[in-house]
Image 1 (spheres, rainbow, N blue to C red):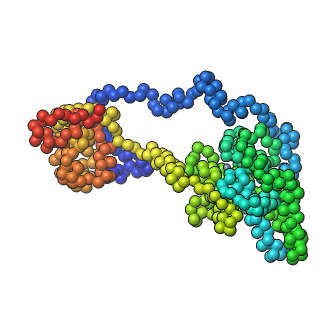
Image 2: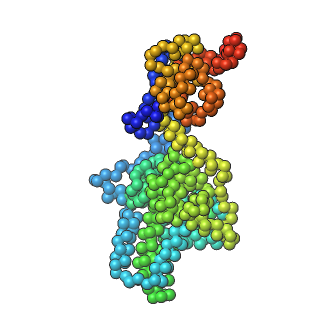
Image 3: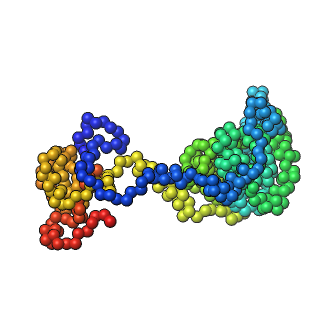
Length: 480
Ligand SMILES: [Zn+2]
Ligand SMILES: [Zn+2]
């Protein structure tokens, strides 16, 4: 086979030569009349009753059917559908930042502070809004809660109460119309479009009773606007101004430019993290793992893991993966500000990995040509096989392990020589093949299986046993 295909330069897994089965009737075996795909298609077709039941028992389908939604955004109505205050803030800030970049001189102190302020307000979102308040991935002391809420306000992304409520809906209804930033609505929509336009419909319900009861959350919610304005613009301006006289740099760099980066860093968790990368734990939904997303989001880039195990305080599991938010939470624990850091059992995490690895393997297996099984081949007796092998029709037939193989195309390339195969034609060569002459390797077993042309009745027996027992042994069919 493999040895005689020089002229057939086929690549991949297509087989150069597979002998056709013997031209004899194939036994009737109960086979499904329809292919599995056809059967699947049929079962997928829900009749009306099924559809009604589905809607009745599915919250998302029921809500989408019963609740009204705003009309689709078109060229004629878009200006009415824009959330103007948010749109102006989000669209103007990059231009203000650019203006500042070209008109303000750099001071190294301001540059360093801008970077620090980026991380502090960013961590307010990742360690605070996201992992602590939206997911309760750990517990924090009162002091830490207020600190995170204060810095989080500086990221100007709404109050933690509003943010966490939307985020819980995002996890609960991922990729559906009840997900406020569903990735199925496109990269632009999930990144920033959902903030620029009025929400098309209310996000799905999410339990926020814990947030309603939380004094620190309620304090931030009540004072959000003044807190956000102070932390985003007033504090950085005053800090840089009073300490080294750079009011202008403090405002444009640590204030506005830093805000542009913090905004788009968080937005990337909803957009990039649902597009870029792979799904090592579950591929039913859009969240993906990628180090680039992790780099731009302070470690929120292992989003496939995060959606599978949302209340785990970690995003990255391996030491070399970038997750500074995880390190910070660990640090909080070390200094007594955080406790009860939640981790999903490693055993359950491994199950996700295993399922996906198997799925990949199954797909790989589908690209390989496998040998014919006994249901695809004619069934003949040992005597018939002997007669056929004497026929001078160009087929060299050898019986091994119950299958009759046409080795005519391989016989000259047999690494053990032509003579050995020649001597086994018309005989049961099972013992010879399995170690009687040579214990063949797995590749040989695989190649041999591709040469199957028929099944031998009672072929599980071996020649020398038959002789010794005088052919009186109760025959054992090779298939039920
Ligand atoms: Zn997500
Ligand atoms: Zn989350």
